[in-house]
Length: 149
Image (cartoon, rainbow, N blue to C red):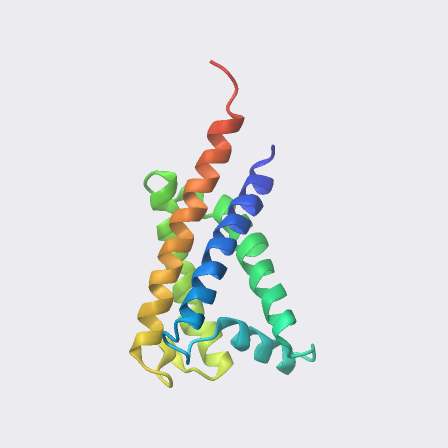
């Protein structure tokens, strides 16, 4: 299996875990001002796409599985440490990009300044979990595909 395919699969698994945590967070009423799906739908609407939740979810999965999965293969695996550590390091870079690009575009401000510091902290925690799962799953796929010695 090509490394890019492993990255996309790892990204998909990590995105499923992240999405589950987001849904649990939402159902529990924790940090209701931080809704990544709504943010992505709003960005889509400003780009001329339908600003619906389904579009937000599609973008969420495309970014998590395809974009971050491939970028992890191309960049993240070059970071220091074991794959799980690389995943966490990589996801912290993704979080930083979200804080300085996505949040401001979505109207939340730089590092979520318009919605409070808890938004930045909560999304950092979710990104670290995403990265740990991404790195672990990628390593699992590498190990599973390793040729016999």
